Length: 276
Image 1 (cartoon, one colour):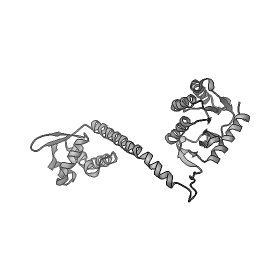
Image 2: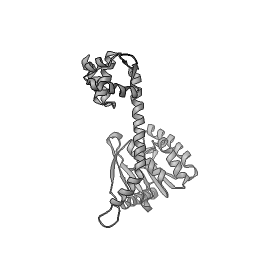
Image 3: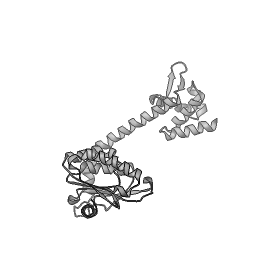
Image 4: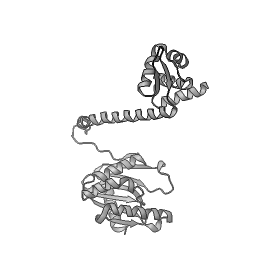
């Protein structure tokens, strides 16, 4: 039983409680309703700290206090404790995001004055930044769709992520962005993938409407998107690696004007001469 209590204490620590809080709650779950002095002896939380720890757990909504002399403490059900910890974590994350957003403008203002090439007043632009394929690359993709001003070139196998980017593409359409989409030629796909592509293509056409510019290419060597390549812009790309799971792939993001323009020019040539 002691091994299970120790495991529970470790789990509660990983769920956001400090050492004393996790030890007190783990032993309270094991003991059931008990006095603070008994819980102090069982959990190893010093007697001088146990009341403060129990008060902290009570404020987090993780236990029940029955007033009296002495007061008695009992745990909530495991499901209620888990729900309370999840809610507390969400609240803390929202608070942290609020603080970061409040400081963001000031940080960017001061940091931009320091982020210069020595003595030239010229902002350094990194060549590329590697990101994981998944949530991070999707966030970057959506941002590019949403903030494009002039052009947006999309190179994709089957536009499998259309539902995730629909609102961002609609924003680009509202701004009259010139959107070009190159997809893999259906005949080069398996029957199952071709069927999925057809469904995604229908959804894509609904988003783009009359402004739809969509072509097929027998090969999609580079997948990703390039925005505003003639006026600076940004690009996100990854090479086509069939059979390799997405979680093992990496994508590259760049805002380097030369790289973005070169990639954009390359895809425009492919659009003109290697797609139909």
